[in-house]
Length: 317
Image 1: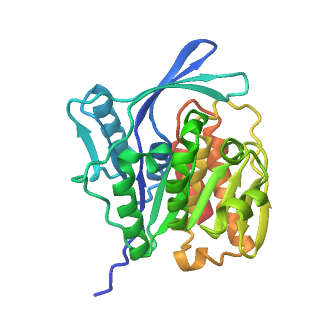
Image 2: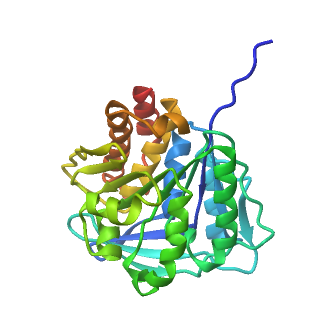
């Protein structure tokens, strides 16, 4: 009997939030969101095996969120609905360019000692980031998960996604941010993140001054500008995909992450291969990532459509 080959999985962990999107002063959409949540929904729509770890309140919003994950092919073995809590909400106000200003109504994330962590295997991809990955209420479990990811030989993809609303906390958050970097295979951030954190948008300066001592692989995105990939062997630059009519940039970075981790899975890029990926390899991976980001900019949804996801991944294989 032929041996069954295990399919690699993507595991995302993060917060959930209901995004209410305003345009011209009027609400135009209300969709389940959260940075890693948005990514994993798009991953699920490609048919890639995936899980989402996190929680929501046991209320109407939480039940809708759980059903939405399951309807989009995302396993919810590690997703909890918590009684007695309230779901989080964000208001996103889009300007004429589709960029958003946010107002958040949420609580600080917590993962109690009893929370069951996802089981990772070699060459699976762990996707984490944002405030959820560095706040005090999740730190014990995040450290445990990162240790287990390293021991299992999984790829760890860490998106800083640092918001200006947390700037006053930056001195306290830098140690856990650096810890996460040291336990990551790839660190990704936007030029906007680093302008807030380090007062520079220069990707090579950021890499050499703040990233390389912790993590060897760094990706810096800059909206419609170029994507910079820094490695110990040098710097690569790739064009972002042009979008003629931007509807919303709310999920752009999250879907960049989704496209990239899907490319790692579907092109057979393992942890060993990734650490020495060629320029052509990076071109294919980044190409899929920017295609996902561009598609997300053309809708008020936080994720790419099923049709686009399946078509793009099939083409990338």
